[in-house]
Length: 332
Image (tube, rainbow, N blue to C red; front, side):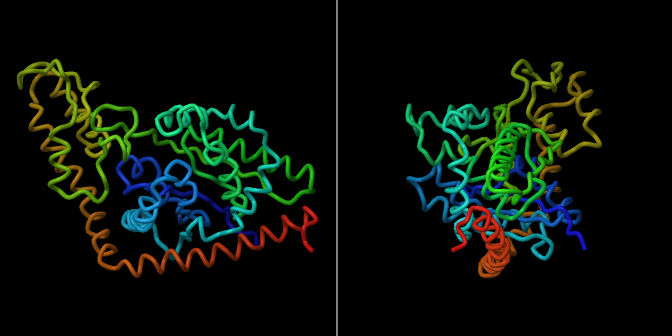
């Protein structure tokens, strides 16, 4: 019997997950887990490419990232979670693939160029070999598990294309061994931060986390950026430049049009609007927060889920490596 298409996706454990992750990928993962055979990687090795000087940060967030995913409804009986550093075949494939990619090709990758520019403070004028080569490592992640589908945002498409190039190059030299993955393009756009920044980020201090308490959410929403030209409650507002309106579109969809209309006519004060948003956010994140509390209280269970999944994933990676080494005449 032909197996289901296999998905490979994952997260770098550099902090707890926020609503950008929730709308950008996690809600979609809950849906896809019933349609595909899904493997989710906790990419601790890749996290070290720009956190090499802070390994403690990576280590302490491994289980935090997993708890967030379990809390939103990703079911470990349907999905296999695994830890990247415990699959040595990924590192071995990375070495083999590094012979198939030139430095100039990596430097031309649009995603890599953007991320290097963002890391200027860390790297200065001299980026590390590990960071420049992380698309090669990602190709190893994908092919180690013979994944056919990789969910990504539009900004990540160049990474999938680079993986496909590596697969084609490998097969052209060593024979048909690997399958080219396809990108599953997420329809969800990147979620803006509370301050209006195009990116909601762990390091930017503008995120609402899935694990935030009701009090933390209230405090953050009350400080969110609104229309700076609106001074009095009955001033005509512009919801198009208001982050509170932006989040209402995510959390209060059924009332969104009415909210915007009242704002434009000066019939809705910013404070009342924020209080309504706080209520909407807590209504959605409340059950997630409660479920996460259960996993916070049972860290042994969370670790067991990760270790059991890693053992299962390793079996597939070993089979891939066996096929790769046979193709490369390394099966001594």
